[in-house]
Length: 331
Ligand SMILES: *[C@@H]1O[C@H](CO)[C@@H](O)[C@H](O)[C@H]1NC(C)=O
Ligand SMILES: *[C@@H]1O[C@H](CO)[C@@H](O)[C@H](O)[C@H]1NC(C)=O
Ligand SMILES: *[C@@H]1O[C@H](CO)[C@@H](O)[C@H](O)[C@H]1NC(C)=O
Ligand SMILES: *[C@@H]1O[C@H](CO)[C@@H](O)[C@H](O)[C@H]1NC(C)=O
View 1 (cartoon, helix red, strand yellow):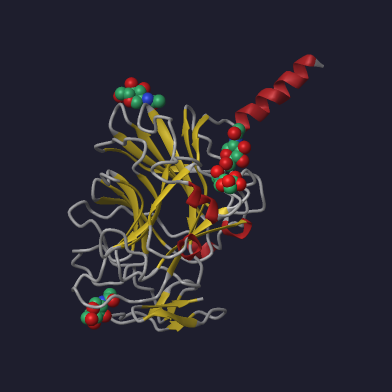
View 2: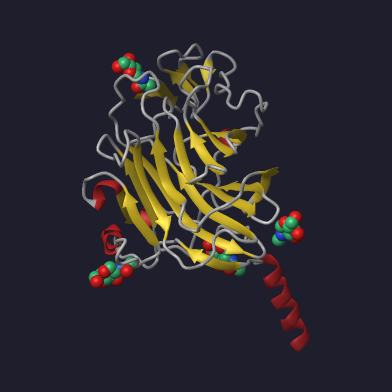
């Protein structure tokens, strides 16, 4: 009896391996985003610092809701919708809304896993003609990026969500709406290496790229959850549409990585989103999104926009809808 209980226990433990949560950014301690206003330099409370944002009310840039989280993640009560728009200016002409960990824990020692899930929807979809820096460290030793990368020779837009290490794209995926992407930055601050873990929907994380050498460091208060959009590369006017970015399941873990995103009813991605992973050559950090083969664009594929030379008709079951001047998508 004891023996069989023990083996069931070890089996459960084996399935649910996890390390120690050193910082919890799941927003379970926030009743609404207005709680972020509790934080100030003089009163450093809550699990986030909130100072990188525009001059509007907090609800213009940050909102919390159970419908903003990956439904697979039963450990989070809610997720966060981060918004940038023409008013989201902070010390620059970049559009920025970012949250920073508020903690006394050391988030830059040993081997740590920075967990987060992210998605976009078809509403206020991020503009792929602009470079976005996402969930980055101040020194940018590792980060996600989305959109046309500033200085890239290939034409805008670029619908890839990319993982960067030291300014080089190391992994990418065609970023379609309404699919949760779960990530962990696996950072060994002792060896100076970073590795990426990824899954979609409710699937367990797997290692998808790395380890790569990087100048790993943080003062534990310079990891930015959120987004920074670079301004128009030609110096002209910026597209004015607001952008919504969704995040949930944010935490930093030490020890053994917890590859489970949760046990809730997260949906598996549609087969069209299992885009093969490619690592662009290091001399060319970014590549244009692949052109659809044949005359019909696939569901979630690009079907129009300024500079688009590929298919403009969609496979049956989806219709081409304009996201912005640079990007139309089969939805
Ligand atoms: C923010 O302050 C309000 C009012 O004091 C309090 O009820 C709430 O729990 C605080 N939120 C956080 C996250 O500390
Ligand atoms: C991190 O790197 C150091 C130095 O290479 C190594 O000794 C250590 O085992 C690594 N830590 C983990 C948890 O892998
Ligand atoms: C940048 O500004 C120019 C000049 O106003 C404009 O024609 C162009 O569409 C803008 N590019 C983007 C990506 O918004
Ligand atoms: C692993 O993480 C998921 C999502 O945060 C959580 O639901 C689960 O309880 C964690 N597993 C363990 C063993 O801590």
